[in-house]
Image (cartoon, rainbow, N blue to C red):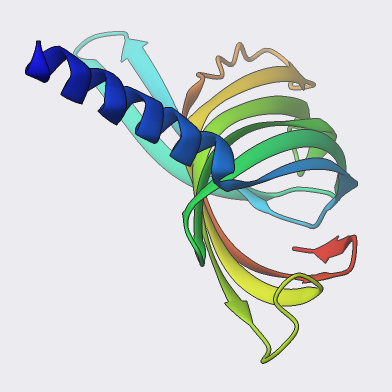
Length: 167
């Protein structure tokens, strides 16, 4: 019986602690600056002896719009853990065509305060790790290209001043 009472007390304490934690909901609307897309090309030739040619290229991309949502919970005063989703719209890839993608991720966000302004202004680092889903519209003649979904990761920094975030 004592074990049961102890277990119930721990559950109540844990739940009340969880709901007492600071949390943050962020809705994003923004522009994603220029980036690069790394691609790998494989060509199989079956005339005489079989030959496989592999080539890795990096193509520049245009600026793109994005919309996203993130949720953070602060189990420690200065470190948040969270999750989010971001949709990047119609990015033009040099010499290839258009892509758009959606990223689902978990995140870690340590923040740094200026003395005395803990809830108004702060700088932070941010790390994302998750999975990206790509959609493409390539415009290449006589070639069939496949785009795979895959691991998504990002590292960055930001600053929050009142309700404005620059990341």
